[in-house]
Length: 343
Ligand code: AMP
Ligand code: MG
Image (cartoon, rainbow, N blue to C red; front, side, top):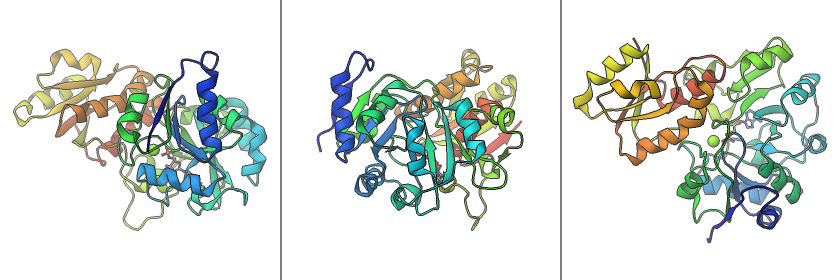
């Protein structure tokens, strides 16, 4: 199919392009668009056929449910059967923003969205282009990341074009994403609120609002054979470049020695900007060492760059494991299929 590219500098400068993209969504088509986390591949979240087309375009396993994106809290009762007090408190503090809440679903939410679960994941994004697209389409928009399933999430329109050209009706180019990693997912259906995926809103920020918050063990540990995933996405290999990635948990000097000692084996380093000057192998930097926000913004682009360079084996310098660092660590662990060398 033909894929239209709409370049949207802002909602004020390109209202006509925005309207065309919103019309495609309202008519059941697929549109990739920017959010503050990563680019999403959107479809009308109440239209079962449109939602199924998302899974086909991405090659996504059909039991991995989608997040519904809303542009105001009026849409919430249509989608969530109950809105617990914790959801109200989190919404007041972090919406619009990079936080997804898992809530009991209403019958209006198609099984194709919820992956057959009795719950639905909902987010109110902060990006103005995303919000205006949702508002103009008049629908809650189901939108997973706009990449082919398994590959790193897209943080620029160029990444979406590489993955989805000819597979979707339109791609909205609205610049690069501010956070760079997918939203934090928190489940509010059990006894204790539980983080299923770390992201731009940190566990520390959630605890400051709610008190007790669990972090699902699958965030930092591989799932055991036969174990049931609290979030189906945890089961799948993710964010992986074509290269084999090994995470090196080490201070700067030890990391540099480890990589340089193996420079004849054709390895690449995925490192902090401060590491670059001392490395003797080809290297791609994903951010500054002391700046996890910067690492979050740079990680997925860096993983794609390693593919473009034809890297086969990558040693990645491990980030810190708290704050936004936990989200960066979680994505790298998955890119490395949990293979970690601690020095
Ligand atoms: P993506 O949109 O590709 O970034 O992935 C959405 C993430 O949210 C996946 O990890 C899903 O497994 C998770 N998710 C979506 N809906 C639910 C739900 N109802 N319960 C638990 N996790 C969910
Ligand atoms: Mg994804």
